[in-house]
Image (cartoon, rainbow, N blue to C red):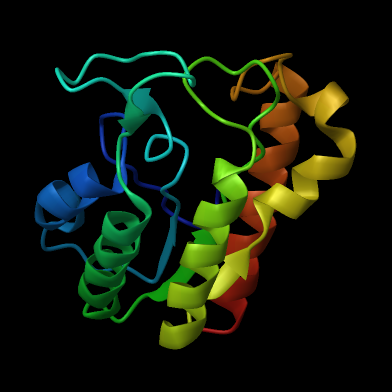
Length: 170
């Protein structure tokens, strides 16, 4: 996006959607936004125990319940819409088997929730889940939600194309 858009992101890991709700005012500030490309999901489905310590997928509970995820997305979208920016939600990328603290398939359910919220509010979708799925072995680390360098580059190109398309229609 160099020379085409000014790109900003919070100076921290944005984490689960409940952190987004708590931090959205700080993250948006008083700036003018043309496009906001965002995602929540992978941190929401991460399992924690009752003392808020990360645990394996076979223990504890998801960091954010499905009901709270939906409520949080509603809150976040409503606030971001007030900026007048074109909003783009990126679907959550696949959780591969063996990923610590996550259950394969949770991301699918959370994407379904997110897509329902985004459709309701007319938010554009950048379907990173579908983009990644057929070529996970070349893009994503084994048993890990993080991506190989090449995978990160391909995801960046996909996101950039989505942002440019939104800028062209603004």
